[in-house]
Image 1: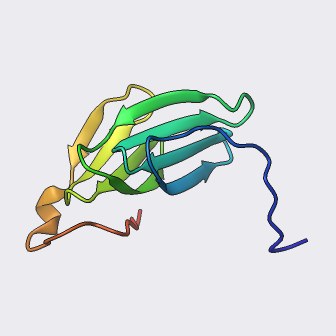
Image 2 (image 1 turned 60 degrees about the horizontal axis):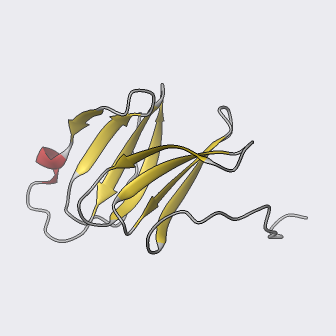
Length: 112
């Protein structure tokens, strides 16, 4: 039924609270970010962590899936990083567009 919640499984994900979760249905992956500064990619079929990225030195507040095996992470350090999920490479930073920003980034929305 719509709106009904149920647990399909749980795994120890991060050292500290999980701050965001995104689902990539096509690849059957779940992306999570946490107060530990990591973004982790979970294989839905196995329940195991397939990849992890030390995205920020401070908590990672949000993630956005960009397609083409890329995602972005926003941290309380004010940085927004774009990553290649396949290679693990940090591709670019969007800190320059945040001029005048002070404090933590709490929300991340990207228009493609």
